[in-house]
Amino acid sequence: MELLITKLLALTAHIGYGGIFFLMAVESSFIPLPSELIVPPAAYLASKGEMNVFLIVILAGLGSVLGASFNYLLGRVLGRPIVYAIAEKKWAKFIFLKKSHIENAEKYFSERGNMATFLGRFVPGVRHLISIPAGFAKMNYLSFISCTFLGSIIWASVLASLGYFFGENQEFILKYAKIIGFGFFIFFVLFFFFLFLIGKIKKARN
Image: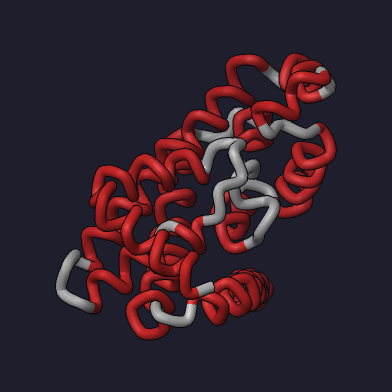
């Protein structure tokens, strides 16, 4: 694990801010590159004064929007039948595109509507593919990038905080990042449900 941390820190120092932006764009496309291996090492370097943690979070968010936009356009331009047809090809595994993963993301989106684009940023296995069903549904692009950027910034802030304060313990970060992500997901679900109830009560009183 110490060797892994050393290599991650060396790689992050080498690629710099542009590399963080690029890798987060890749992470938000259909290639399953864990963001837990991108942002925390950079934030740890920020704690040592070698990088700026705020720039890391912003660039991580912008990179996520770029990668997610690629998936969104893929779903919107090609459409559901073509995307699924591609996912069923034998060679699709070489571009990390699986029919079952798209099905899970589409089910998640259909159950939660447009808000799934925001909430999905906190759910492992859904985060990098939730943009495809948003494209299928032709979600308003401005709303799409707003929800994606907000969710990505919050998630990047969580990872940056873990890296900044616990950067030397990569095992701790990998173990608890997913738990924290689910915690944020549950919090926002309850929060929006609360707002929905408040709206219903006010409407009933009027």
